[in-house]
Amino acid sequence: MSNTHLEPAELIQAAENLVPLLREKAREAEIARKPLDEVIDAIREARLFSLMVPKCYGGHEADLDTFFEVSLTLSRADASMGWLVSFYLEHAFWFCGFPEEFQKEVFANQSYVLAPATLNIGGGKAKEVDGGYRVSGRWQWGTGIIHADWVLVGAMVASEDGSMAPLFFAMPREEVDAIDTWHVAGMCSTGSYDIEVNDVFVPKSRTVSMFDLTNATSASQIHNGPLYRTPLIPILGFASALSMLGAAQGALEEYQSQTKAKIAANQARAGGTIKDEGKPSVVAEAALTIDAAELILRDVLRDVMEQRDAASPETRGSWITRMAHAIFMCRRAVQDIVSVTGASGSRLESPIQRALRDISTGSNHVLFDREARYADYGRTLLDQPIQSMMV
Image (tube, rainbow, N blue to C red; front, side, top):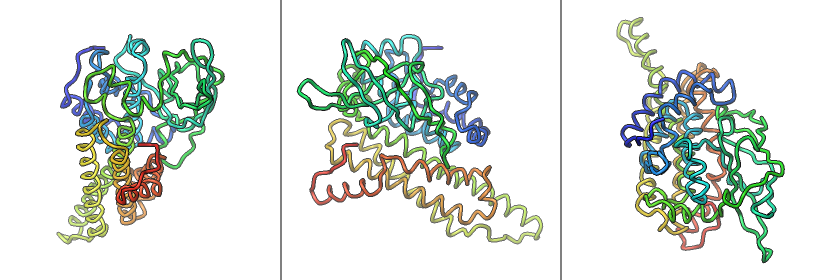
């Protein structure tokens, strides 16, 4: 594989080139309940998996604005695949916060890494031993485990003074088990199986503090680019939110295509009479809502790129709340589109129905807990401290 990095416009075009394949294979992958080898190989060939990897490792070192466009482009075609690829990309970003010795090991033979990662530090336990840790546990939501090279999991570790500290651990895919629990209503083709680890030894060089990772403290000490001064949680937020925006935009596009075809057919049969298909006012409101949601996400993107790790916890919390609000807007818009699609919108093979299933599932990501996010944003408006640590 060439080590020549691609420019942002080339990466975005590569994503556009993949759209027909993702659309064609979306239903097949949903039925399979996992990503298809053919699709993953095509994305690999397009060299998108190296998007956030530093140039010193052969990556493209593209910033958040390119990540935004690539993720959204893929998600319009298939929200599940957009979600999976976005998570692969931002999980590669996680590796940039691990010790440099380990990073060189990971990227020694290829300019990307495919890995699931979980923020659920309560899923397992780790005990410090000579030279590293013994890790055991079981973690849900292992997005990316099907084609993984490495796996990232978190657990609490007791310090010498008795206090507990959250650490992340990296281990080769062959040292963990994937448990197929993925029987879900939406996001089916992500294949987000459980991850089980049974007493695996992890060297200290393959560990990093959760706080150093999420605050970009360790990554910014190793890599100079502005991307590596960006807190992790907003990047995770974009990976999730853009998939939901893409689902909504894809549903609207499909509705327009279907309805225009019906209108044309009715015109041909009725000698120019246009039948009022699908309650245009309802769809107009949905379209405007989706546009507004995109504007919110683009405004957050601009703010994140301006402030990065200089942002206060309150500002970071507002970023995630605004993302969550945009997602809820998209979900309502898709529900409205489905309501005027007619009986055909209930068919499982319908892209509009799949968008509804995907957005109904994906919008429940823990990062976008509605009550918690709105409550924290309300506290910020009243100059009160926020409570969430996921910022």
